[in-house]
Length: 90
Image (cartoon, rainbow, N blue to C red; front, top):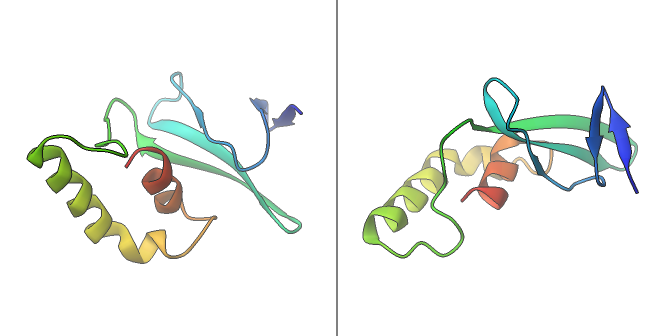
């Protein structure tokens, strides 16, 4: 299933994709919950997260700091950019 929304192509709803040509944001996702549809852009272009399984202590500390800083916004749910950044990049 391919979805076109505001000139962009998405594989499906709630499936993040990289946006290398966007000037500031590294990822985008077309979110659908019930009858609400919203385009969410998240992640700073050129910055990598620590990944799902950080190996070094520095990566582990970066991941813990991100989650501590943004926990309130992550808890807001699927329409929050922090939720998607946590899920995809951290």
